[in-house]
Length: 230
Figure (spheres, helix red, strand yellow):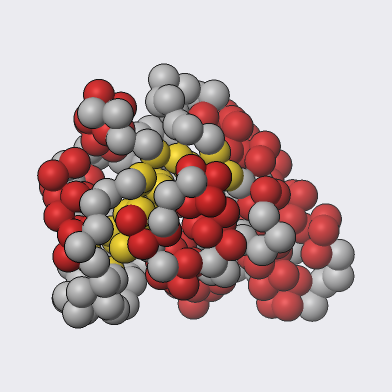
């Protein structure tokens, strides 16, 4: 039986309500390319790295120049983030509780460093993360396990003693592959159940005690996830 060593938080859609901002930014860039974004695009947009979404738009439009599309996406998203990215319900209280109880916690994001720095300098400015990881800080980002493995290594703790808090299928896959216990709080896309995945409707339901309980139970059998509002 393990004890909780650290909590690793996703950023977009988990701590801050930026998934809608990312969708709006992608919709803007897609329209410029002559593509109307629909629900069919969601798996290539929600929770995906900038380069992945850019590659999808290039495929969908027959355009070339993935790097240019990625740059346009980052610029459009950053503009919206700078205008304000509100915290998700319960995020501020949970972060404050972890800080008060001296539980290490870090930010593990698939967003570029420029966006991570904008959010941690804005909506998350008061939060004392041990460190932040962006898509630029590992050779591969989500859904690969590299970000969460790197975070556990930097903290010097076993990855199996970490709870990763995620909202998207790609982020959950990343944390799951790394060996974390995953607390899933879905936002725009549903996440499939699986061993080691536990679900909450909102961070308002989550406390340090529940996080400790998840690690003690370890990678237990799958449980049914909550429904995602449509």
